[in-house]
Length: 435
Image (cartoon, rainbow, N blue to C red; front, side):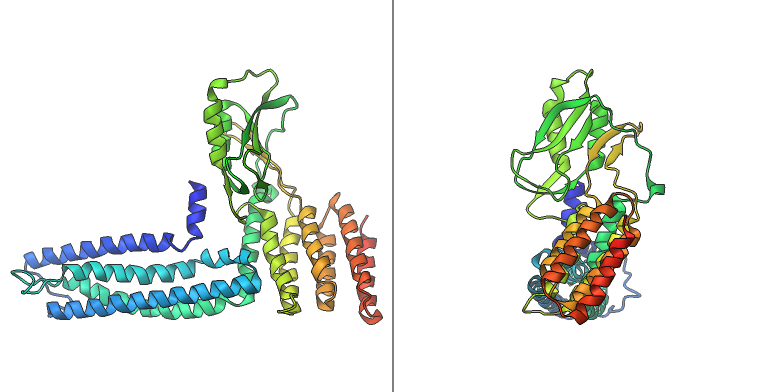
């Protein structure tokens, strides 16, 4: 259920569908209210109390037809922005525009207004259509207010779409997603519960296999914890979110104590419960995939360095944004990856990537595409200095290796001495501060 909601939230159809159903229900309700008022002889207070059937039809036709045209135009603009984003910033960032609540809201309001006027228009009757004329005055009045609100929504859409195409807006949205997944997987120590350690005598009771090929997009830990507690097992996730799996590949295992008996009667139900809790799709998503969230900012920077773009300032801004998230990540305790049940016993185990693994991927892209851009190199050095100040423990040793690789890649480009001297001095100073 959680997986379905996440996919629906990033689609263009979900919010318009909800608004459309609500608009149809509202149109029917206000029309019936008008019938009730007419039966009681009460039409006072309506803004259009003297409206004729012909006038009511004209108003509804104009509003409905106009809003449908505006909705089509808005949708065309959105598709154009999606195409521009795909070519300029990378196709994997298109989902950010599809998940944008502003775009979904505008499309939902405009299409629901059309549906509302269509249903109300059906209820309007002239004397030629029936024995007595009927004009749902309250419903038509509300349609006028909807049209006024739609004008405001249109102005908002123009402003919103103009901001959406700016790289700073896109970069800020990707950074927020990255921070959210960091908070989810690497919470502060004060937010963590004490979890029992994994027993040493656990053995594999059953293996569960992927039913389709693709990327693991989401793992429903609540369902897995409930299942594991009900069957007194520990579930180990073999393929955490972001992993590409093939059909038939092992994605999870249930572990039991060596002295615990096997319950063969539950194996079929267990397979269905486990595979349904691990969502596999065609593309990666950032909801639990920290590597993909980091890749979003990295890709913005790399695209800025493309020959057709040649915008190192975009790459510098992306590196600065990435450094703020990675420094936050380095300041958090190591990802626990252990999920207890209500009884406090360990129920689910999942290995999350370490900060140095994510940093290594980002630095690899920087070494590959950014060494010929002095501004980008300086931003990369700044990233390394911030990471050195924030990292603790054994990851500092691995950071030394990453700095050495960065230095070698930079020297290999044969930079002029004027540019190279301050960069190499800062790199060597960072290395000296490491153990």
